[in-house]
Length: 314
Ligand code: FAD
Image (cartoon, rainbow, N blue to C red; front, side):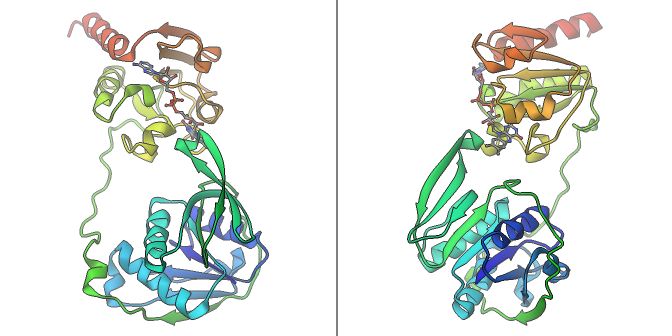
């Protein structure tokens, strides 16, 4: 039996994890923790039982408490495999679970071939490498890379819903969400912007994005970025352009320090004009560019901003 950790029944990545798990052909159970929606609808994704954790201490996300809840079920149900979504929380909860069980955990998998040991293919290095690895352990613990499979409902299973109360200690809620703030909006949304100024790994750091933000501000543009940047934690995923980010079609796309990987270009190929700034003349991005500047973005971008300010008389 496979146990799938579900963030929320409406969460697409959790639905993808269920779809991935369903493909493995074993009986499927789901566990939900701390969500008011309970487990409604998960039979559609093949779950025959949904386990809902109930505890007053599960009122606010706390990774250790979430993992303790899943562990409670693992102890009782002895699944062969525990699978979760490859989201920030999915990876965090299953990593805590693995530590509690003293087992290995493999994050962001795109395939699993059972065996002793099992073989997984997983996404590494910000998506630039697919690694085949052996996964030992009992149960097998892994998360599914976002969008490795499309979420497919329609399984039509009758899922029983069973509530349980995990044992939680003070230590389990030491690190917990205490407050939420909405992300500040710069006013121009990435999906609708006429001009997008995007930065890649070549920007070098989170602080390096100051020059990108400055140019975007002068052009009334939205800021975008590549997946290498979101994986490094320099910018939020909401700004990622590409196959697993936002697909955009601006009048002008300015790509700074971006190599032009196919997964990135999948998100910006509908741009009317592409200006690429990169010191490497062999960079693949130039094959798609309408305008090319072979140079260091930290010199070129401030120079463009300077010219715009001059032109505006500011
Ligand atoms: P790199 O490829 O490392 O390129 C950095 C570039 O910066 C280089 O060309 C370098 O010459 C240049 N540079 C260095 N210094 C400077 C400087 N001072 N000034 C200017 N340029 C400089 N990627 C996405 O972006 N979006 C996605 O949605 C996405 N989805 C993916 C989905 C899957 C399933 C997989 C496997 C991968 C996905 N990727 C995605 C990742 C993609 O394959 C690339 O790894 C990623 O786009 C690389 O980002 P980058 O161009 O910023 O980094």
